[in-house]
Length: 212
Ligand code: PRT
Ligand code: MG
Image (cartoon, rainbow, N blue to C red; front, side, top):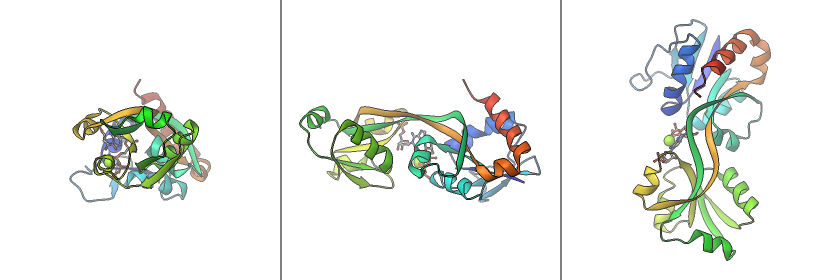
């Protein structure tokens, strides 16, 4: 049995075409079914649905043989025990710094001001500002980062941006792009040895189906 960990939403949706290219059809729709373990047309392949941030943990400890997770999630997790053979180029976005439109970020940086930064991506934010030599107070949030500068909780946020619509709707501006983000295939290192043949076949099929 091969167990693939996916999160509902964009990662599930964008992984379906890759699975199809490998001859795998998922038999349940996670948006209508309440099942957490989904069967496929292959009796020896199943999909488990977990939170996006839990995918690396499931794969690391063998709760799943492989999974799909964003580069953001993998950096924050640390990647321990994970083999990362492929950038699938799906669920693409970027990690950025954003501030209120009326906050002069460049001036604050130039003056060497201490910045209050709210984010769920604490490792990425800490590394980014350390590289720039900017001192920060980090405020860990679990969601709705956009609210932090609007309420005075923080001067800046570090968050994912794709269309930019969420920032615009909240009168925030992107002042720095930290890195491009896409989702990767992650594989449990022990499973790669024990289930070498079927996993290799799956990885190869995914590799040839990556959008260009
Ligand atoms: O939603 P939940 O709290 O369950 O978990 P999650 O947010 O971690 O999962 P999910 O499914 O939303 O995201 C999974 C992965 O998709 C992330 O880890 C990213 O690698 C990737 N991804 C790609 C994105 C986006 N694009 C994205 N736009 N993840 C989040 N967003 C959010 C962003 O945080 C912001 O709130 O969408 C908003 C911005 O979008 P625009 O289009 O308005 O700029
Ligand atoms: Mg989300």
